[in-house]
Every structure is written in C-alpha cells, then in structure tokens.
Figure (cartoon, rainbow, N blue to C red):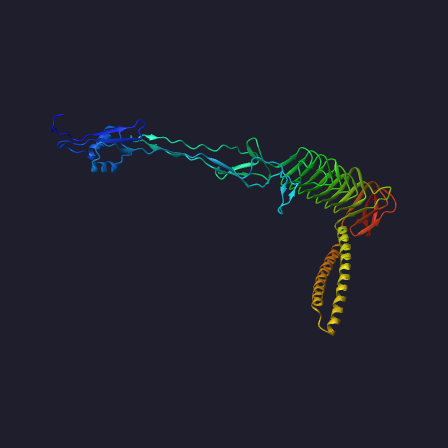
Length: 459
C-alpha cells in the first residue's frame, strides 16, 4: 500500500454455523480515512442475513470507544426453552410388606400385620404434574428454532381408581383395599384371603367385603363394613360385619356380630347377634339373638343355651332327651320382660346400697350434734351424700324405664315357635310376657299365645 494512502475503516461480520451468534470486527482508519459508523455495521449485518437479536447498544458502544480489531458480539439468538417432563407423586408405598404394627402406646401388635390398606372413595392416591410445552426460540436470521416438549409421566389408572381434576390426580373410586399390581395402584372392593386367618395373615379389618378360603383360628378377629364369607370354620374367634355373614362349616366358641343375616353350618357354644335372620343346621349351647328370625334348618336342632328372636323361631328339635336347659325367648315384649326383670334386680341392689349410705349419714349427723366432725368424717359425709344422690337418680331413671316397658307390654304380638319334631322337657318358652316350662315332650307342635298363656297347636 502506497505511503500516506487514505484507508477507510471497514467491518467484517462472522456468523457461526448454527446461526446463534454473529461477531463483528472493524479496522482502524488511516491517513484521514473515514471511521466506522453504526449504519455501516448494520448494513454489513444485513448483507450476512443477520436480522434478529441485534445488540444495537453494544454496537453503538464499540463504535464510540473505537474498539478496533476486536471481536464484538453483534447479535445473539433467543434459545428455545424446552418443556419440563411430567411427574407423578404417590402418597402410598408401592411395596406393601406384612409386618407387626406398632400401637399408639408404642407396643407391638403381633396380630395386626398391616395386610390390608383400607381406603375410602375420593381419597387421593397420587398427584400428577403435567408436562409443559416450553417456548420456541429464534436464530439471528429470524428462523424459528423448535423447542423439545416435556414428556408425560408414565402411569396406569388401575381398577377401582379414577383420574380426576383435569388429569392432575388419581383417587380411589370405591371403598376397598389399596394394592399395587401390574404397574398400577388398584382398589379391590373384595378382600380375598386364599388361606386361613392366623399368624400368617393377622387380624383382618376391612372396609369392603371379605372372602376367606380357609378358616379363622382362635384369638383372631375379622371385621368388615360389608359381607364376610368363610369357606371353612370359625373357632374361638371374633367375626363382625355390617352386611351378611356366611360360614360354610360352622362356629365353635366364637363371637359373631352382624348387621345383616347370618348363615352357618353349625353353631356351637357361640355368641351370635344379628339384626337379620340367623340360620344354622344346629344350635348347641351359646347365646343367639336375632332381630328377625332364628331358623334351625336341615337337622334343625336347638339345644342348650339361650335363644332370642323378635319375629319367629323355627326348628325340628328344641331341647334334648337329656333335659338340657334351653331358653327360648320370642318377641319384643319377651325381650322387654327380660329387661324389666333385670332392672328390678338392679333397683333392689341400688336401694340396699342407698339405705346403707343413709345409715352412714344418720350416724354422722348424730356425731355432729356432739361436736365438730373431723376432716376425715367430713369427707366421708360428702362422699356418702354424693353417692346416695347419684343412686337415687339412677333408681328414678330405671323406674321410669320400667313404666315405659309396662305400657309396651300391654300390646300383644301374633308370634309362634314352630317345632317339626319335639319340644323336650328342660325347655323354657317365653312369648311376649308369657312363660312356660315344658315338663313333657311335645311333638309336631307350634307354641303360641292364647288367652294370656302359651299353648301348643298342631303343625
């Protein structure tokens, strides 16, 4: 280049291959040449197809500071914002391991193994976060750069559950047992125990129906808010259901509570209470109460123990040739009569105790006339007076109940006890407020009330 030749400032623009940035560099003018201007730089960017993300402030500053021969960033892209992946958070453990549970007092209950996870309809099982789409970007040439959308969380909606709240929540759709199987949480409305209820299963307390393929052993308890079906027997156990109870083989030395009907193969030395009908081939010993009927089907034996029904009792044999003591009570009035007798006994006992407390108060009053009572005797007086007033209040309440029962007992019910074969001696029949001790075997008869007494009529 000739000496003293005028050289104007020039600009060079470099665009990186992925069009995310553009750099510029301008030369120093010589011998009075023209300096670079912002307009010249903008024209150079345009020639290189740079039209977006131009850093005008940085270009202006570079020109003002005369940053010759330096790489200056002239444009930047807006990168895309990728979407976030969806997530799922479970509120219950996927793995459910049977193990003894700790009670509130810190002791270990070895009969409660946590085999059942009760859950009610509407209870949340999992919270779901939906994926986001993200935002697209733009390169420095003005071309749209696509973002990567988020991926939905992987999950399955199992049987007995529902996806709700616009896909943000999984809830229980029914009452039942929460289990994780085949890759999803499910709610089983029926709990199936494939074997026995014993140390391997622990006690069962379930919100739904229970189906036990085996038996229930001594010391264990099965509770259900619906029906219970037991394919084996119940021995020394407790069974309670808000629905019906079915025990295929039978019950020995057990306690059964039911808000529906009870049907069992045999019932021996067991306490059974049901709001519905109780049916068995044989009832031997124990205490059975039905708010509807007691039916001894098949062999039809009722022998030994106490049996109470409000609507009716049917059997083939009641009592036995050995005169086993058997109490049969039928009807609301009969039940009320029993309650009345019990209340009379309690009133008599409370009146005796009240009289004893009265004597103590009289004695203390006599002592007080002679001088001030000691602190111990004052305390005894206060306790005696308080207990006597409490007893008198209870006596008054019990007598009012007796009065109500007496009014109710004026009503009669058309009830009967049917026996296809024999009523044996040793049986006590109570129908309404009438009582009959059977002293001779009576066959093919129905016991009912006529003329204020229990009579037998042929079947």
